[in-house]
Image (cartoon, rainbow, N blue to C red):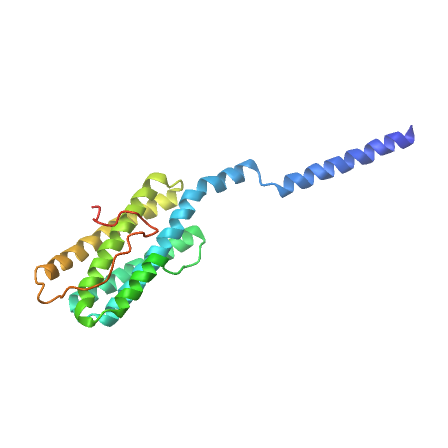
Length: 204
């Protein structure tokens, strides 16, 4: 009888140990739910970071290549604004600063190969398209974000992106009304961008 009781006691201890180990190994339901709820925010952070890094790279390229003072000033402002936005995104998400997405990089490479005579107009059209895509990305995030910090960042950054877009459009309109100063170019189209399938017009 003593042996039987001892066996029961040992078995109970082992069972409790196994259950305890399983509970420690498995995340609590609230932790799993929190991770699930953060997924839309983290996906947005990753895409927005890639787009932001691409905007910085494009802006630096314009400051090196353009002979137009107004365009260079705009590029410098866009660069500084996106550096700050990227830092906020990286801090909020815990993600490292990334490289531009593949579609962004392809267009940047094409821009870099253009002659100085065609660069300015091509760069503005590139930035018009990229800001349209970023605005669409941020608008979607405003509807799907689950964290207050993400929603606050979206609201703030959308204002910045729309302001950039207005300035880009204004300068591009000036260039398009004086075509003799800004020749046609062959930049090519890469509409299948990861940030948005629609890149034709800016959403204001």
